[in-house]
Length: 155
Image (cartoon, rainbow, N blue to C red; front, top):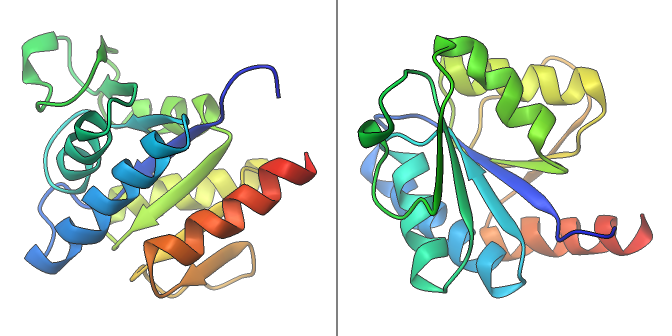
């Protein structure tokens, strides 16, 4: 790759509190490796990942569903108001070289499904059970990021 990997961190905007820790750890881990974090720009898992990446000096791209740049959560260094509503989920996936999913929700499921369908690698922590192969499930951030490192090194 000529650019650093772009990894989407996806998950619920209103997650259970215990999901915020791995979401933040994901952002930290990506930034530590010099990878770009991509999120949907709003709260919950997205905000936690952005905060984690920002705390390590990482670049964080937020692709907002609306047209108001000020709606982005803190920690995003690049904010793009798409005006596309939930259709921006496809931009998140197609912008990314891999997807790291933390938890599950309907929006997260759409992103996971699109990533699997289009061949974007997906790693998941505490995600929904999937009906078909294509999602690599892990118990922690370190294991999921190690898998991504091996994948990117082989590319």
